[in-house]
Length: 187
Image (tube, rainbow, N blue to C red; front, side, top):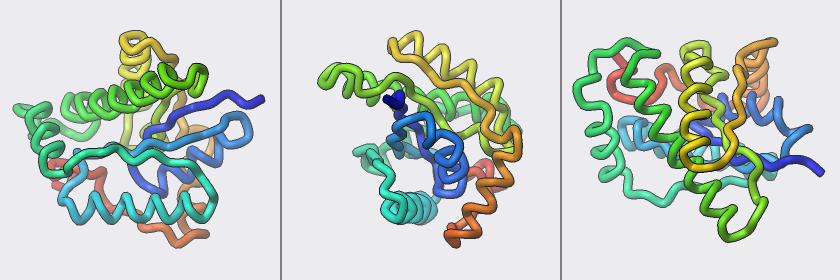
């Protein structure tokens, strides 16, 4: 029997590459929570693209129940003072932590209702060549200890992972964005 993982998903291209790497060993369910993505039209476009991709491949997904404007304002408060940080800097680390905490909490809440629903929580963030896998994994492991659920540490870009995600994106004509997501990364 496969182990089960709740995997944070930020967009269809990154998720596609990580799903491809995990699907043989894990029962993967995705979780969408990305109040960092700006503007709302970009947030909604990425979510719609991910939902369409999941529908084509029958991938299970939970969409975080939140009002975009409220959560984006909350995210902005979390990164206040870090707006000028470079990519991979402290702002990104706060952002990873916020989204990983949300994923871990959802996985643990489901486990509380339905024991053993998830063995792990994780994130596909490390597939991006612009993301620091070591920092993501350290944050994920800290969050996992705090929430009491195991974090699946990985650097999904290794062994051609990012290139594979690009191939899958091309195969399915997935929208590939030109920036990480937040208004600060767009600059």
